[in-house]
Image 1 (cartoon, rainbow, N blue to C red):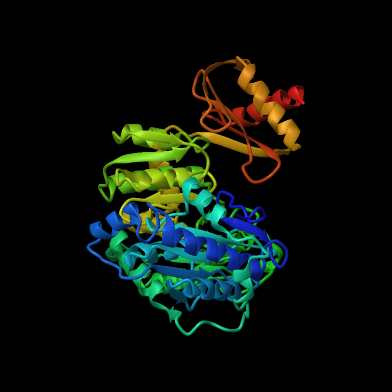
Image 2 (image 1 turned 60 degrees about the horizontal axis):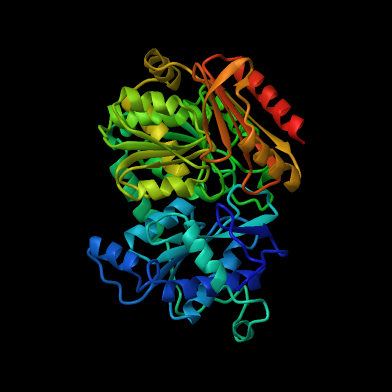
Length: 495
């Protein structure tokens, strides 16, 4: 059992050449192989995987794993290491020839009824960070149960098996199949989800920013095939990501903003390097929050695509989603923070959308996990279908729904302070905040204080850093800032 390789909410991640080495990837691949060959539910002979294959009308003779990589330094070479280790364990491997977005790997898993996929990616982390994601047979990031099983199967760094295995970055086992097919099948699938006729008639002008990541092989080919004019930046590889943190947030998209304004584009779209999150710039150069985009897209799915079902969102995602769901006659469910909880619901087939405030979005009839590529293209699809500018679409939207305003801040704290804050809030929570009574306390993930009138303040620890995160939302534009200030006073009074 490994003590040094631990998964976070989005897989194993560490500093390249420090915690993330060729040997670490090799050990992780052996742990995954053991999981595939032995787990009674998620493994190749497992009940869950066999049922999944029967539902797809397929009978795989050998376990198949998709292996992909992003555009980061050493990602491709580390993917080779993982592929070699998997093959040595008797697992069939199909390796992407081009940098592979995580949602495309997830689509490939479903499309080929693979037992899972390994993607070497640091997602939106700093340039010196990289990692490994394990995607299970259901086309989504590994659940807590799967992660726990893999971690206990990872061999120690002094295991004998490692001595007999090559970590040569330049070599690839002859049994590994290298393919470009993932891109083709994924883009063909998108054509079934989007209004291609409207896109071809739209005469839209779209600016794209892959942020030097894997979207570079997807945005432009798809849009140009639809006859849409495309202007792009950062469509090559840069191991330093242009000196910014590539998270598709407002700071990272300043150059996309300039492009949109200078070329008078209708919209700017962007994804983080592995495409599991999205970012958008409107025609006026404004970054649009995922908290506003998700409700707009939910309305689009219901009105224009006639989808019916349930909706889910994370506990700190905007309640604007709730308004759209209620007005559309849809049931909404709240989940803890972490998209894997939304994925668990999307797998059921009962939900038409799942969203989180940090830029994750999933829709029905697709993968159950977040897909930044599809989220961006759905917004383009919305503009084409409505044949309106985004500004007008938002104006029409807010005639039916009441605007909500939000704010988020992070406060550094020690682990001891974080534990003390959470314990105190559990024992003695505030009964009023900003001179308003606390109507209800939601402890799904941290503490969310819902106030009389609909405003709310959430206080929760980060799952990956020593931070306390504060979130606030209100119908009044000034209230979120006041609620955040009150939240800071509350945690400061405790520590």
